[in-house]
Image 1: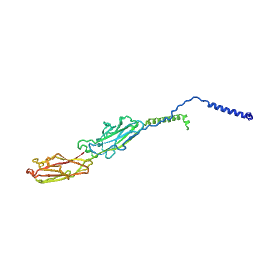
Image 2: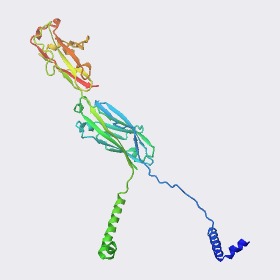
Image 3: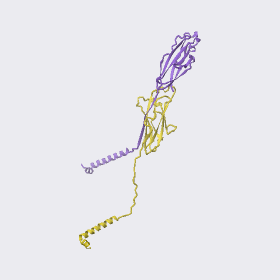
Image 4: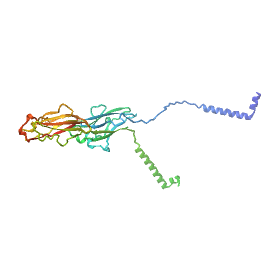
Length: 183
Length: 182
């Protein structure tokens, strides 16, 4: 008690004590300003770009026919797929390689090219090799991601009357095929 | 001249407007060309088609195989001809008979002379009978590129067919070798 009297008897100590109490009270008041709240989160909203890609079972030429004779034909096939995640419209284009030294316009125009889609019996192209420029595959309907379609190519050396193709002997024609896809 | 000063003067404002318009134009241009879309491609180049060739050599091309001058009964004249495949394709060959010309037409040497056509190394002749009875075409078989066949052609005046009316008579028999791809 004697010690307490000493403490409270000191004016300066009284002021300090009062201030300390005030600070504590103010802190308590601030901390006690609680109210009801509610939250809801939608985290991880991701945005990724889609992709469009082509798979092709043939990395090189689909058809190579040397020493063809009238009446002979050659077949080759390729399966094309959309390896992307978004639908794409696929096309097949053909360009005659006229720069080759042994290229013959007459022979390229004499050969017949047929292109069959997905095992169909009716070709989606049936005309001269040199007349082929481009095709909208599956009639231009977009292919979904993961879709694949098979194509059969047949090139025929028509056989006319005996000797009718003699002028074609040793002639050559080359075509470059390009598959393309666009969203 | 500071930027602040520029904005205050008329010229400065005009310049600022131009700068803003230029920026807008650039932005608009980028909008026009920003309609890019994903594309993908795959190529199958160099699809080559080459026609083969069918040709042959004839060791007696353009000349007679048998020159049977001064034949008489019991006598024969013969010659050979070699056909070689020189193209890139195998051919099925035939020997075709052309129009026989007899002079005089009657009694006709072709109705007397016997023609033998035989591939060398093969026992059975392709033809062995009167010239006038020879079919229009004889099948010789296939000749591959690089291969060759030699044929013996013999004309005989049979003793049994001697005819004084044929003295001084002549006959021409054109022969043609032809090949077709099989």
